[in-house]
Image (tube, rainbow, N blue to C red):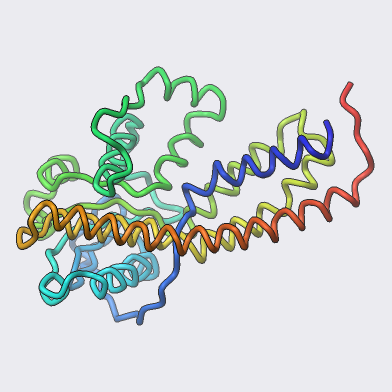
Length: 293
């Protein structure tokens, strides 16, 4: 296998993983959060904030989502900023149980979140069970599920109430519902994908050398950029479900916000890819030449 081919494999893996870790990082001040020990959902405690009920397994995971909620609230139109519609966030951290095991359900939630941002036209052909089964054969059903759970999802409130049995909980009044991963979860999934690629017999020594720089690169991406997925998902959900805004205004606000975040992410991606490619070239140069029989 030539160095050029392995370089392309490494770059392809980056573009496979980037949708999981694409984000930006606007700093916000952490505020103290306290959990309700009596309200537990899927091993996650409820943390009550002014903008959302957050179900998370730890104060750190809840605070990560809350920082993004603060960023988004500051970016809302004036009326919504002063009194944002309150929602529900279900956070997935590295060691958490999945919020759902049905991949078709998770896929639909991801597509609904994408549609809220204007990324997936209603006429787009949905992912079928057959396509999911084929993907699971290639990488394994558990890893495939973890990859999907590393994306933000959107659930209509009425469905969330039934799905998560929220009827008697304060969160039943949420106007919008988003599922969101932590940076640690995204980093863990990225490492699992790299482990899978590195363990393939055909990868070889040079392939492993070229793939190795991806690990610290994607760890940095997860820490620095995962928030944009959450921020855009939160913003779109808040704007879409704000009755004070007319449909045309909602569409304009979401489109403008997404474009701004995408520009920030693209600049970071270009800088990161340049450093990654240099690291891969340096790593490949230290390896003996391999030939493919």
